[in-house]
Structures are given as structure tokens and as C-alpha cells.
Image (tube, rainbow, N blue to C red; front, side):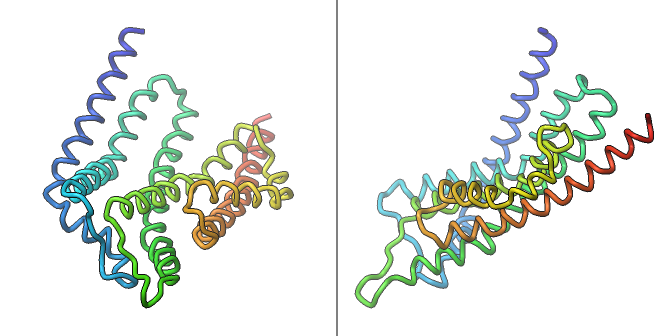
Length: 237
């Protein structure tokens, strides 16, 4: 038990130091990173502002920390994988390894989808309600929180195919049943999108539609995988 706790301590310290080092390095590129962050809003607004002397510094500090964590995320997952690897059987390792790689790739894909497609459209839609005498004056702190929250939400919901596939493989859910009850799934996805996104119908639809497509695709993949798994078990018997 003590050896196991020592391995866990080593993995946590290594992950923390890697994230800290990456955040320090990202600080030197925090200015272009901040310019990249505000790029989606430039087509609909003249820019963003900071309302207190420390707001710009704190935003650059936050973006350095988050980008650093974003860069070393595969290393952190690798350390977690190395920690749990000794306790896995060979058959379980064949499942966990592609699961770890796929979950990392899907998270990155969700963040990229949010930044390149969703956020520019949501920002343009929300700012279109301004008038000649009502112009936006957007603070960098609030805008950063909006982008970070939406990117994290899409990164998490893009893990849905793996969740459905994993639950189907271990027998907790029936993929054919999930396909038949797609209406209830759609309702839950809409509620989930309403919680994770800003309180406007446009951003909620921007999340609900791709997540519903991911859900249907993941269920179809789960049906194929579970069918092959049952055929393999039948052949072994």
C-alpha cells in the first residue's frame, strides 16, 4: 500500500511540475495567445477592454495556466495510465490504451470545434442585437471566462461516444435500446446544453445539435462493437 501511495505521489508531483513549467513558458507567449483568444470577437466588435489595472495581468496569467495545462494534458494522462497499468490484466490493457488516446483526441477536438466554429458564431449572434446608440463594451475578464467555459464544455461533451461505447461494452446499457429512445436522449442533451452554455437558445442549439449527432454515431458504433464482441465470445464457447 505504501509503495502504491508513493507511486501516486510521484505521478501527482510530476504532473504538477509539468503543468507549472508549461504555464511559465506560455507566459512569454501570453500576448499573442491573448490576441488569438479575442480574434473571434474582432469581426463584430472593435475589441475588448480591461476595467481595472490588474484585470489584464490576471487574464494573461489565467491564459498561461490554462494553455500550459492544455499542452501537458497528454503527459498527465500518460502518468495516470502508468499508475494504473500494473493493476490491469493484458486484456484490460488492450482496452484502456486506445481509450486513453481516443479520450485525449476527442477532448482536443471538442475544444477546437468550440473555438473555431461555435464561439465566433455565438459572439456574432449575441452582438447583433446592438443598435447605433447601444454598442458593446466587453471586458477581457468576462470574455475569457465565456470562452474558457464554452471550450471546456465542448471538450467534455465530445467524450460522449467513448462513454456510450464503454457502458455498452461492459453491459450496463443496451445500444439498441439507446437508439430506440433517442427522443429522451435529445431531451437530456438539450437540458445538459442549457446548463453548460450561456442562457441563449443559439449557443444551446450549437451544442445540442453536434452532441446529438455524436450520440447517434456512438450508439451505432456501440452496436457494431458489441455484436463483434458477442460473436467472438460465441466462437470461443
